[in-house]
Image 1 (cartoon, one colour):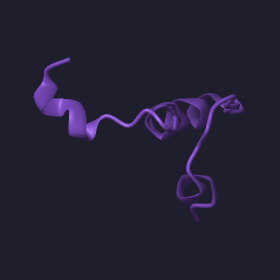
Image 2 (cartoon, helix red, strand yellow):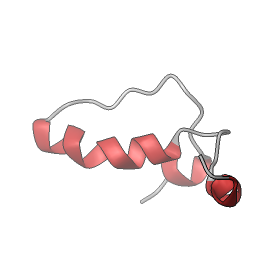
Image 3 (cartoon, rainbow, N blue to C red):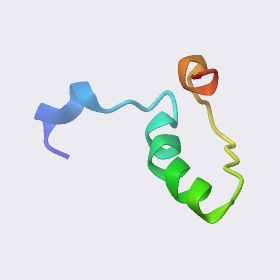
Image 4 (cartoon, rainbow, N blue to C red):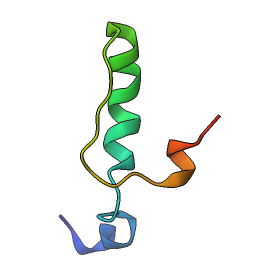
Length: 46
C-alpha cells in the first residue's frame, strides 16, 4: 500500500469489514458473526 494512505488504515477494529458485509448478510437473511474487535459506536448504533 502506498505510504500516503497509512493515516487512513485502521488495524485496531474490524469495523470496515462489518460495514462492508452487513447489507449482504441482511439481504440473504444471514447472521453476521465477528471474532474480532468492533468499535462500541458501531456495535451500539441505532
